Image (tube, rainbow, N blue to C red):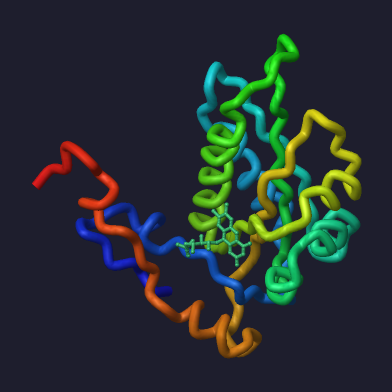
Length: 191
Ligand SMILES: Cc1cc2nc3c(=O)[nH]c(=O)nc-3n(C[C@H](O)[C@H](O)[C@H](O)COP(=O)(O)O)c2cc1C
């Protein structure tokens, strides 16, 4: 594990989490781990407690997993097939009164962040993917108009680098980088 070089010490969960592409193909997620990961996603905050997130969960080999794999762009397909689970994150973009709710993406991002960190705290890795065919996902899973596909998250055990091609292997071993705090905190950065 390669811990991020942070400007001050933070919870190792954030410093250690990364989005790898190497997954152990033989690993399967225990139902209780998957349940806890989804439970963490459930408890995210959202505007008016609207909880717009809706999850479709596939485990390697099942119909949902295979259906999701088919929606991924080739670059993602090339590594994500080894994940233990693929989860499609969708959002219900309607308020209870039937009017459109513009904040659904923000809320879903919070929920997925919790899912991700629960998974990492249990020793798994996650990798989110925007690179998938959303129209195909809507068709495959008959999502209807009120469910908007947002992202596919791969979850599993980190595997060996050997399984990746050279380019992916180099990216995987590179240190994680971020903008400086002074670039993202526009006013009020403590010194
Ligand atoms: C919404 C979203 C979409 C992403 N889409 C892809 C993707 O399609 N393929 C991929 O390999 N990585 C994808 N990533 C992973 C990012 O590239 C990665 O999170 C970023 O480079 C930071 O690396 P880290 O998560 O290891 O810190 C995505 C991440 C997010 C949050």
